Every structure is written in structure tokens, then in C-alpha cells.
Image (tube, rainbow, N blue to C red; front, side):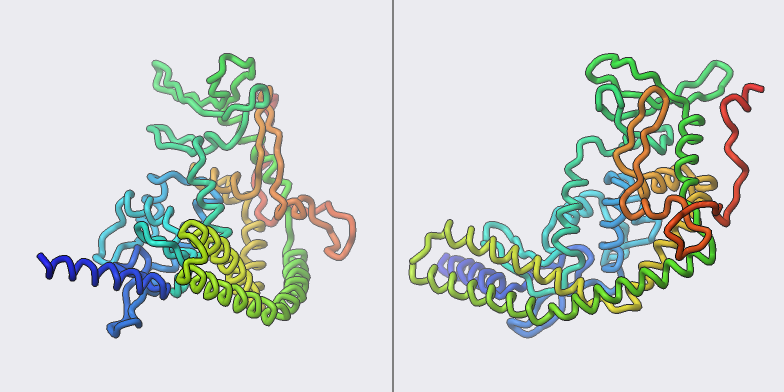
Length: 383
């Protein structure tokens, strides 16, 4: 009995010591692996076989508001497996998306939270955005019909979400409509057929136009501007390092005050949490400013390459690709009297109409390099 008590005490003391040092105290969470065999040198690090997929997955969830079923399908599509070589279970991924370990915060059992010493996979700001998406009540769910534009618009009459429903006639022909959920009663907003909805969406997507000449100029222009911003950010490195050192000194002072019983446990935990949060924000700012020019240019090229073919992606893509395209470039969509109130996201506003001369202040008179047959109008279909 005495041996069991001493073993329990020593185990808890060891866990507490590891947590105070910022080391992960047990088996590594998904996308991390344990390493080290010497005492005080055991910790976790990103799993070289799958760690790159976690930030990529988070970006997809934030952009496209995926639910857990779609997340698991996406991981299987990428062939992402756990350390045993199996696909991840939905419960495992759900916990991984809620665990702050991935932005560098150690929160284990009822021990006081502290700043981890491992490499985070995402920033605190991105983790916060992820939690906002996961907390949404109106996330799309699976059904036997593929409705790409379900719950990405709001009703213009009552403000509720726009849903979709498919009806099959006796002849076997299917009809899909999009309309208000009418949870607060019939608001009088008429539904629209999927074909006419796609026509309107494609018309708005087609406003994004770019040519080879403009693509080259805009890449160079944005790279030069981002280069200036990076030079400024690199100049703030010393200031960030100084602030982080000062905050770490404050943590040491708090610990001394707690040991001397100058602070209660609740006061110590609250103050420590505030300082740790600030350190995480500064660490994220420091890592953001470490991007080199090659990284910036790659991001800029990816953005414009996507704009270059976004219309084609909507026209020839499957139902999920259509949904991703709309969510990627638009926000706050409204459906009212069978018409869409369209709003481009900020990053895409400057892509609407592109100048014949890229250096000109006026924009327009250019078509995309992926021409598609024009969308038939309603009256053309009836003639």
C-alpha cells in the first residue's frame, strides 16, 4: 500500500515537472510523434509523415465550412494515416481540431496550462478561426442528394439559411430547388431551380478576368509590395524578441510570488493565462515575419493561378468543386425573389474587370483565357 502511494505521488510529481517545463507529458497527439530518451529531454515534434496535412486541413475547414464526415473523406482522399497505418477515426479528428496543443498551448487534465516548447503546426489566430467554424450550427450535412450550394446563402426576406430539396417525378426526372428553410413560417420568398441559380453564380464568377500579360505584371507588382512589407517586418524582430523575454521574466516573477504565497492559485492561473496568450501572439507574429521572398512569390502565384482558372473550375468541376469555388471568392450571399445578392471577398474585389493596360488606372475590356460557351438566358431556353 505504501509503495502504491509513493509511486502515485512520484508519477504526479514527474508529470507536474514536465508540464512546468513545457514538455508534453504523455503519448503524442495525432500529427505529432514522441522523441528523446533522456530525462528532461523528452518531448514531441511534428510527425514527418503527416504533420503537413494538419494546417492544410484547417485551411480547408475554414474556407469551405466542412463537417466531420467531409473532413474524414478529405483525409482519405489525401491518404493521410495515423502512426499505425490506419485512417483516422472521426472521434480522433474531432478531438484534434479542438486541442490547443496544435498552436503551442499545453493544457493537460487539471494541471495549470502553460506554454509548450514544441513546434506548433498553426497560429493562435488560425486556431480561433477554426473554433468559430466548428461552433457554427448551420454547417452542411450529408444527405442522399448532392446539393453544392446548400446553406451558403441567406434568405433576403427573413434572414434564415437557404436550403435545397430534390423531388423526383413519376417519370423518374429529378427537380432540385433552393429556397428558405421557413423555420419561422412562410416568409414569401419563392424558391429557384438549381439550373437558374447556377446561371447567376456563373455570371458573377465570370467577372473575374485576367490575361497572361496582366498575370505577369500583377505577380511582379504584388511581390515588390510584399517584399517591402517583409523588410519592415524583419526590422521588428529585435523588438518582438525583447517583448517575449520581458513576458517570460514576468512569468518567473509570478511563479516566485506564488511560491511565497503572495498570490492565490486563482490569481496566479489568471495572470499566467494572460501572459501565455500574449506570448503565443508574439510568437505567431515573429514566425509570420520569417517568410522569405520565395514563399511570398509562391503564395502570390498560387492566388493568381487560381483566379486564372476559377471559371473553368466551376463549369467542369463536380458538386464539391462548385461549392468550394463559390465559398472561396464570395461572402454574405443573399437570395431574394430568385435573384442572388453577390459580394466578392476582399482579396477578389480587385480581380473584377482587368485593364487592357495593366498599368492603367482604368480596368476592363479583357476576357479570361478559358473561354466557355455563353450561358443561355431564360428567354433563349423558351424559344
